[in-house]
Image 1 (cartoon, rainbow, N blue to C red):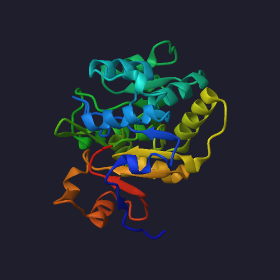
Image 2 (tube, rainbow, N blue to C red):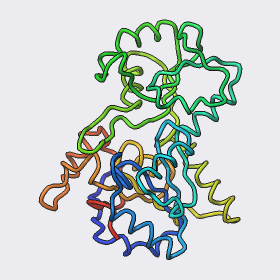
Image 3 (tube, helix red, strand yellow):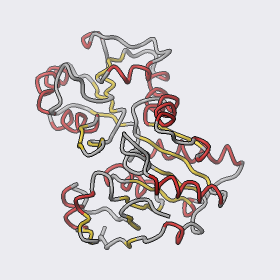
Length: 288
């Protein structure tokens, strides 16, 4: 696949008549973990006025109910969107469909709500079949290399690693933090078997599309769907996998690649090992 320089979108309203449904990422597009982006909220309000359908698709390794509670704390108006889908929802669905397996949770305690109502979870890795990873834990460390000894032991015991958040990093305020995707990548590098739930994998997009089609009562053509996100490996690659258009937002983890109103596109792709990825359009931030 040959790359081409994506078009810079000056105003989101210029393409608002091209699509009926918007798959929009949360972290890096709507908020930065601390506060909402005002311009993004304006875009959602304007799309609502135009009767567009908005589906928030997040790689949060938590239930949509928990994410909604978090958004409320940021003073986000949930009436601006039709549906919220998380990778945690897809992960929990997998757990519930595999009641014959025992799962071990690798992740912070704040993600424990994902396992509410789940009975096949065990705190002993040796008594578990598979590992559900929602993120890094303080007890082991904040550096990926801190997990090497644990991972080598688990790989030797043929433990399958389930990644509930394929994002490798996230920008919290101005600080870069590692996510479950970084641990999954390291586990695979060491020779372990990894399964992913969430973007860029097709399952979450199919789930989102079916959900909105069920709600409105008719099938939506893929050419009428736009994916908006700030991550090449998840949002943009996921859109390409699902054969829908994409808009890359640059004020998240890639803000350093946009300097003096110029996007160093080739450097951005190479740094993410995504040289064969196409992007339809980009904006510095989601702006009406």
